[in-house]
Amino acid sequence: MRVALFVTCVNDALYPGTGIAVVRLLERLGVAVDFPAAQGCCGQPQYNTGYRHEAEPLLRRTAQAFADHRYVVTPSGSCAAMLREHYPRMGRRAEAEGRGGHLTALAESLAPRVYELTEFLVDVLGVADVGAYFPHRVTYHPSCHGLRGLGLGERPRRLLAAVRGLELVELPGAQECCGFGGTFAVKNPDVSAAMGADKIEHAAGTGASVLCGADNSCLAHLDGLLRRSGPPSLRALHLAEILASTEEDPLR
Image (cartoon, rainbow, N blue to C red; front, side, top):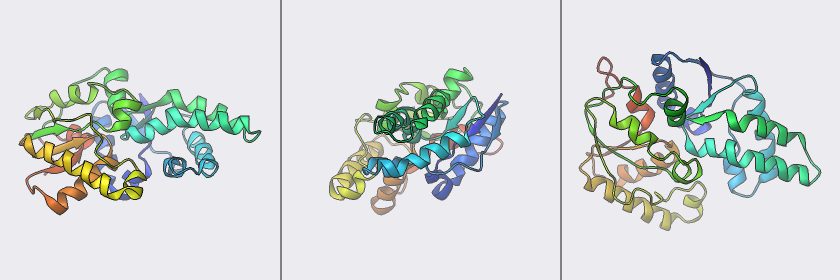
């Protein structure tokens, strides 16, 4: 099987280790991974801020970059939701306004081929145990896009529970937003920081050494709070990096 990796601009610019982990993980499972060089930002920051027309060229570029791939896998529920939910909506609105009707066809062709990483592992590959080893106590934060937009449900927890050496502990208030919310954190910094502090407090109370998530945008917010106010025993880490870890090459 061959897939295309949509690494997302956040991971490409700030968390390249997550993209590397996805490739290591998928190749270990026998999946060949392509990386279309034409990919870039999906346009979510522009779209969420009200610049829909400015996001439309990014829809076109993204759809064209992945046009030849049956499976497009991304380690971001946020960007997966953008491609699957908002792209078709953008296309239809552009068409209704008499502009760029072809955007609808591009968006509707791409959307059903897009999979968030845990969806692809569980639903397409049909695996829960990916052969990972991670001897740490871990708690999982479900991001809002993954939880509510994509309905990932128990997929991430099933994958984490099958990791050898990993102790998975439930996060109190797990379904509450961490406070990032993209531009929400910029427009409402005090509220955002307070929400994030609550999430950190809950995570620290579990005794976990790792706060895990499937969206590095949320984890960037939480990691920033951890670096400023601790506790130093707790770190934020993307789920892909845990699943890529093995006994022969454990993450530090």
